[in-house]
Structure formats: structure tokens, C-alpha cells
Length: 302
Length: 317
Image (cartoon, rainbow over all chains, first blue to last red; front, top):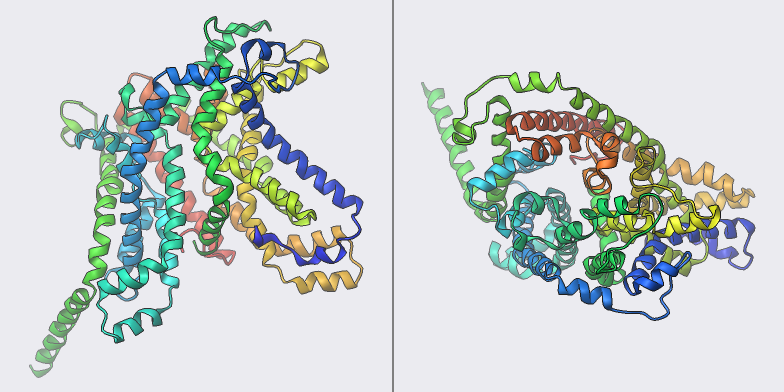
């Protein structure tokens, strides 16, 4: 990340001091504390029950197996979860982007009557909200409970992202639009030919934010969707790992560890964790700098 | 008579110019419509539903048909011991967050800034930023896997104690510290970015001058870096104060289990319980929820005012 390059230290790069080593050591330990749980989860998901039971501390499967994944995928819930989450993404992201971007651009224009009103109208929703019960009743009245639209529509526009976009549009030079106007271009043509191509980077960043938010969303889905066939991926993971965990604690009370007779429970759970976070894990290293850019734009301006 | 006439002309001219301005900006209003429709229905709509807090809910009559009962729901709320307990719980947990959690991203940013091995630094930063992008469902699943009786942490403990294991997940003593640790584990790397940006904005002349004077690394840290990012720290602190009554439902909900229910019942959890787990009394729940929303709004407005007094743009721009 370029933001944190500090030119000062470069000059003395040749002699490494004790304090350098101490700082590096602390950060390496911090990094390992974050990294090891992930590696541990990956390792367990690829191991057999027998091998896991015989491991003393840290596991490195000698004979990796896909058994846990096979068992997990035999359970149709994962496929259902993926399908539903992807459906929510496909329905929700274009809608979110359209509403957010057009509102952000519209409200960023200078000097239209009601500019302040519209902005504060929206800003107020950041301070105050009706809460889950009125929202649930609204969804029910609209006939949207037990449809994926309830999840899509409950959080279509994020005011925070809207403001980030609005700041971007406000920052575009006026001369750009003025000169196009002098050339006789109409408002829509300017929007289509000049503003839209210029705003592709911010669109990409906000798409990324919305996608991650939607991928991770579970609360609204838990409240609005009762049907098993509509469960989103996060809820499927919840039911596999979190809702069954109490029994496993009770079973192992007293120190003797017992596993489910049929399946290797821990293998199944870790495989479910991996499958749920896989897409985020795969794209994150490549898109990291876009996320950072997004938060910095937000932090500076809002 | 003449002046009156003149005034009338100005007024009507102002009218026409307002309409002209609106017509001139018709593209703006067209663009606002889709978002506006969403805000009216799905953000302001539920706010209308809050009238339920002042009614006795009858499912067959709906929100609007149910009879008004004034402040009665609130009277019940304010005599509910569990309500007070949850408010105090929330405040204690959040004060703990201020003490134990809040300094961590700052310390991390300072460490990263002092780190000299650039490639290693980048990899560490990537690792530390990543968990922020996972849901608390995933993170809680990982943590529970780690702290289970047969998990990695207990395997290590077993190695040192010769067989004894420690109950992390069902332990009321451990639960709240666990909230702080897991929050730092998940989000410190991400929160550090704001401070790193602040550090990168410091004028390097100051460091060069200090170096010529022979200042040590720690002298530079404490007399240049820290004072320069103090405004950022104060603003972040004030904004965190704005969330004093909320924060962390996702985390508490996913990490808790019935064994720790007593220490885990924050205001958000209390609202969840009375709404979805007890025999539902939607009007009562809505009253509690409205109380929380109002307190949160007041806190946020105060935080915004505070941040603005510190010279920041604050929350509300």
C-alpha cells in the first residue's frame, strides 16, 4: 500500500537495528495470530477424522482427503445457499448501483432547488431508523417476506456509499461539463458520454463494497426468510456451525472428546467455513487496494 | 398602489424563476427519483411504523388500526429490570471496548509505520486487513472452531498442562474479554488504515530536522508522529463514543450461546430476545427499539458536534 511508504527509513536501510527486529517480530506474531486460525481451518477440512484425533497440536494432513467436502456437498443446503446468495447479488447489485449512482450524481449538481433538503432527507436515515419490527411488518404488508426481494430491498441504498460517490461527483471539474455544454451537448448526453466513463473507478469500488456486504448479509435474511429453500449461504453456515455447536460442547463435557458417529463433524464444519469464504478469499488479494482507496475517500470526505 | 403592483410582479417573477430553475434541472430530479422512491418506502416507511410504540398491537387490526395507548408501553419498559440490566451491560462492554480495543489500531499503525522490511510489511498488512471482509458468522465459526474443546488452542494448553482443557466458549468470565480480542483480531488491520493515512500526511521535514538533531526513533515517535495524528485519534474516539449504546450485535449474537446468555445480553440482544424468542409483544419491542434509536441519534449528533469542534468535517459533512 503506497500510502504508508515513509521515505525516512530508506536512507539507513543498510544497518538493521535491534528495534527493527523487535518491531518486525511483534508484527510477525500479530500476523501469525490472524493467519494461523485460517490455516488451521483449511487443514482440518482436508483431513480424516482418525488423523485429526491423533494430532497433538497443529495439524498437517499427510494424506489429504476431500471426504468432508463430499459429505458437505451431498447436503443440498450448500448448493441452495450459493444459489440464493448469487440470486440476491444478481438482483441487488445492479439495482443498488443504479439507485446509488443516479441519486449521488443528481444530488451532487450545484444550485438546483431543494438540493439541501434532498441531502438532509437522506442523511437523516443515517441517524435514525425504524428498526427491525416496523421493517418486518412493512415487508409483510408488501407481500415480500419469504421472497429474496425482501433481502434485496431492505438494504438497496447505503447512504454511506452514496455520499462517497457524491463526493466523487462533486470533485469533478465544472469546466468539463461547461465546455461540453458550449459544444451544444445536452444534459443526458453529457451524463452518458462524459460523466459515466469518468466514474468507472468509483463505480467499481462501490460495486465491490456492495458485493461484499451482500455476500456477508445474514440478519435480514434470517428475519425475512423462513423457508428452508430460501436460506442464503451465511445462514446455511450458521445452521451448520453455530446452531449445532451447543450439542458438541455438551457431548464433550468432562474432557472426553466424542465425535458424531457418522460424520467427522469438525471436518464438515471447517469445510463449510471454507466454502462460504472462498470467493472473498480468492478475490481479496487482487482487489485489496481498491478497498483501501474506497475507505480513504470516505474517511477524508465524510 | 403602484408599489403593491410592483411587488406582485416581483413575486410572480420569482415564482416563474423557481419553476424555470426546476425545469432547467429536470435531469437532476429525474435522477433523484429511483433513490428517492427507495428512501421513502424502505427507510421512512418503517419510521412510520414506529407509531406502534404508542399502541396496543392487534394483529388483526394491523399497525394503523390498533388502538392508541399513549406512553403505556414505555412505562412497562422503564420498570423492566432486564431492560436496565441490558443498558448497563451495553455501556460496560463499550467502555471496555474504548479501553482495550480502541488503542489497538493506533498501535498497529505505528508499528507498521516503523517496520522496515517493506515486502514483509505488505504481506502482513494483507493478512491483517482480510478478516474485516468476512461476516461475523464466518469469523465466529472460525473462533469457535479454534476455542472448542478439541480445537487448536486447547490442544496447545493440553500440551503444557498434561491433559487439562479450558472451557472458553461457555465461560461467563471469558466472554467479554473474548469480544475485545476477536474484534481486534477481525478489524484492527482495517481500522489502522485511517491512522496510516494520517501518518503519511505528516510533513517529512520534521523527521529530517529531528534526525539532524540526533533524535532517537522513540523520540521521533513520541514528539513527531503521535502529536501529528492526535487530531485523527480524537475524532475517531469521539465518533466511537457515538456508538456507545449500540455496536456489535453481529459479533455478540454469533459468538454467544445459552451458557453465557447472562453476560451477553446487551440492549440489542435484549431487543432481539423480547422480539423473536419470547411470546412476541411487538408494541413493547418497538417501544424499546424506539428508545434505543433516539438515544443513538442523540449520541451521534453529540459526536458529530464534538468532531466538528475538533476541526474535522464530522459525520454529517
